[in-house]
Figure (tube, rainbow, N blue to C red):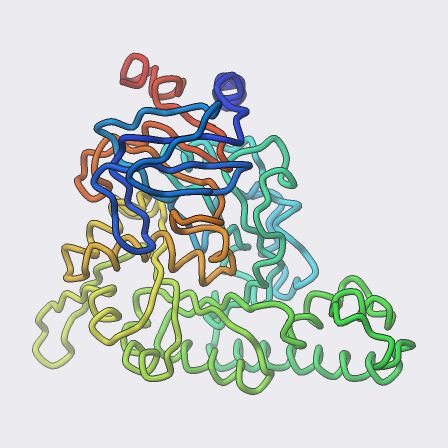
Length: 409
């Protein structure tokens, strides 16, 4: 009911694809910031960024005393799925898609607007060996199709076993990929479409060759048309993921848990960017001295020279908020610019939407946040959220905040 009411209220203030935000501090995440500047959105795209921008007949938001920045980008989450429709009881399901499990009515998406997460890469959960197709969505829309930013960011694979022997899990995963490769080779040999008749669109060409729908996603992965989002929980998992990628010529994005920290130098040497979890600190016991050792995961990766994005989670204190994650990165020694990039520009690049999202610069989508304060101050609220030039969230009209704070103020 609250979600429906929120949709009705926000619809009453939305509708403009053109918008001018003026007199605000602008954090671009693409170069120099503006102490007082303007952002002009035309036709849903950022048209101009500067100290003084004029646009006749365009709705105006006076951002005096406010901060404008790009929306946060979540590079990996399984939130937003109807748990009843997840496929984690079956180990190999490359043919399914989160399209059929994302529930736009879940409070998660309303929370994302309030938290400033405007682009969200929703992937299947971690308990499946070869899961299904993910989807990048915005937290706004009545249907999954209307929320979609990118329909096919990649397939989910886990090299970390949910139970049992690690070697057996990897052997099974390798066997499934090998079986898929043999089936693809057989399909290509028997296919009815000659090389000179192929369109160059791998999905269409595979269908023309008679590939079954249950095979298409795995075949496309093996042909390099899709990226594998590979979950790794240990440094050994990272090495196994690399071996599989080399053996089967897979494009991969590694999603690394905190215990992968021992692979940081290797990842830096190989120039492999990764997505880090929201768990920033772990404590281990030294086997020789018995002393407890604190390991700050993003600092280890940063000091090693690994390019990384960081995602959020409801599983730990503060981990829900991208601003909190960025503030922690600064505390652990990263520059302000690099910390903000880890929750905006870099995750957008890693999930394939960097040409559209992650920074405020001409040509990119008009997805911006208007904050009450600096995002790293610990005092900032999302005052307004803008997607494609439309104001889709206003703090003063948020029903859930109104219950607690009296009008959300």
